[in-house]
Length: 100
Image 1: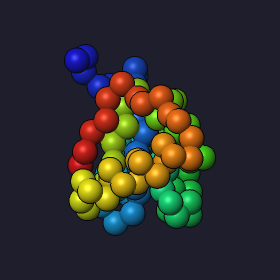
Image 2 (image 1 turned 90 degrees about the vertical axis):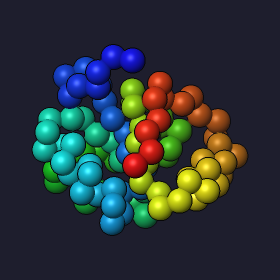
Image 3 (image 1 turned 30 degrees about the vertical axis):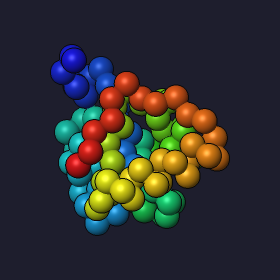
Image 4 (image 1 turned 120 degrees about the horizontal axis):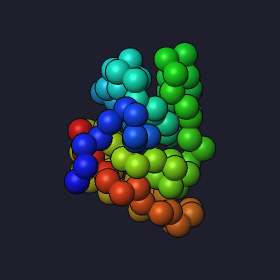
């Protein structure tokens, strides 16, 4: 795997609440391009002022980013969430998914 750099890679982030928001803010401050998705759209929209963008769906986020991270408090919640999203619309998964 090649290094993930702010010059070459666009990051996606699913779950930008209590844990995810500060992570995304630091990534944006470090120069990364980050698109965010949260079930509560207003949480993702808070990141616009830091230079982030908001994805309309996990499918769009995944297909437009090189690496997607998520911040769910339990892997079971993440798996359930992804199953729900895939039932709504099939998605092309990003090359890499990272769990926080």
